[in-house]
Amino acid sequence: MVHMATSILSDSSKFVFSAIREEDDFAEGLRRQGKQVVKLSSGDPALYYPTPKYIVDAYAQALTNGKTSYSRSQGVMELVDAITGRYKARYGIGITEEDVMVTSGVAEALTFLNSALLNPGDQAVILKPYYPQYPVAIQMFGGSYLAGDYDESNEWGIKLDALARLVRSRKASSKRIKYMLVTNPNNPTGTVLPRRALQEVVDLASEHRILLVSDEIYDEIVFSGAEFTSIGELAKGIPHVILNGASKAFDATGFRIGYVLIPEDDRASDELKHKITDYCRVRLSANTPAQYAIASAMGNSAEHERTVRKMIEAIEGIVDTAMKQLGENQYLSAVRPNGAFYIFPRIDMSSLDLKDDREFVHRLLEEKLVQTTRGSGFGAPSHLRIVALAPKELMGDCVQRINDFCKDHAK
Ligand code: PLP
Figure 1 (tube, rainbow, N blue to C red):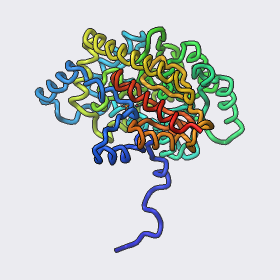
Figure 2: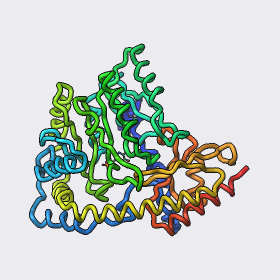
Figure 3: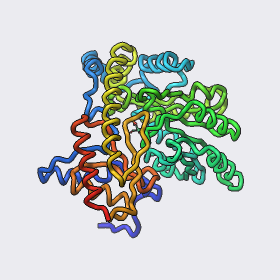
Figure 4: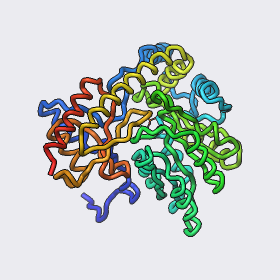
C-alpha cells in the first residue's frame, strides 16, 4: 500500500463545509436512540407543507409522457418561457430566452457563477449575516470575500456608508472586486429590503462598475405590509445577475430547479451568459421531469396563487406566535422578520453558562431535542437561526423548550 505523505485533498476543499447541517449526524444519532428530534434547522418548506398536488401531478405527467432524457442544457424551452413570463408579469422586466439558464437549484448556480468569475485573489462583496454557501462558493475557487453589514439595530437594513467605504477601500488594494451580492428577502434575518435601500446598492454598484448579483429565492415569501422589489426593476442598463428558483415559492426544494437571469447585453453580461451556458452544457442538464413540472406550475397562476398564499399566511401566523413567545425570553431578542421563514434572535451569551452559540445549539439539541443553527455559521456570532415552518402547536412547544433551556442555563 502506498502511503501519501500529505493530504490527498485540495487546499481549497477546506472551505467546503455546511454550518446548517453540522448537527445532522448528532440529531440522527439521537433519533436512532428512539428520541424525537424536531428539525428547525432546514429552510425546507416541503418538510412541513407537502409540495402542492398540481405540481406533483405535473411531475408524474412528465414521467408518463416520457420526459426522462437529458434536456436542453440551459433549460427546456417550456420552462425558459415560463420564467421570462413570470418576471414580466410580476416585475415588468423584459427578459429574452438567451438571458435564462436553468440550474440544479441556486446552489448549483452559485458554484457556476463563482467558478466563472473568480481568479485566485479576486474578491466578492457580500453582507453579514449571509447565507453560508456564499463564502464557501467564493473560497472554493480561490476568491475571498469582503463582508458589509446588515444593521440589527435598524431592522437589519443595509449599513450603506460602511458598505461604500468597504468598496472604496479596495482601491488601496491590488485585489479586484468581481461582484457584489444582496439577498432579498434575506436568509437568515427574513428582511425584505425597501426599494430605496436597494436603489442605493444599485447606485453604488453602478458608480464603481461592479457586477451586481441578487439572490431572490424568497421573492414570493413576503408578509403583509412588506413589498418585494426585484433588482431587475432598478438595475436597467447596469450589469446584473438574478438568482431564483422553485425551491421556496413553489415549495419544491427536492426538485432542484433554480435559474440564473442575466438581462443586460453589455460585454460583461454577454460573456457571463455564454460562459454559464458552457457550465450548463458540461454538466449536461438539470432534472428533466422537474423542469416540465415547474414550467406547468408557473403557467398555472390561479393554482399557484392559491397554494402559495395559504403557505405564506400559515408561515406568518407561525412567526407571530413564535415572536410573541420569544418576547417572554429575556436572553433572546429578535427583530421581527417580514419575509422568508426564519427568526434570527441575538443570544445574550454573557447571561448564560454557555461558551458560544455553537455550544448553545448543540446543548439545545441534546437537552431539548430541538435542532436549530448557530448564527456564527452566517457570520453573526451569538445568534440563533430558527426555521419557522413547523405547525403552530409544535412550534409553540419548541419555543417553550428554547425558553426553558435558556432558564436552565442562566448564570
Ligand atoms: N439562496 C438562499 C438565500 C437560500 O436560503 C437557499 C436555501 O435555503 C438557497 C439559495 C439554495 O436554494 P436552492 O434550493 O435553489 O439550491
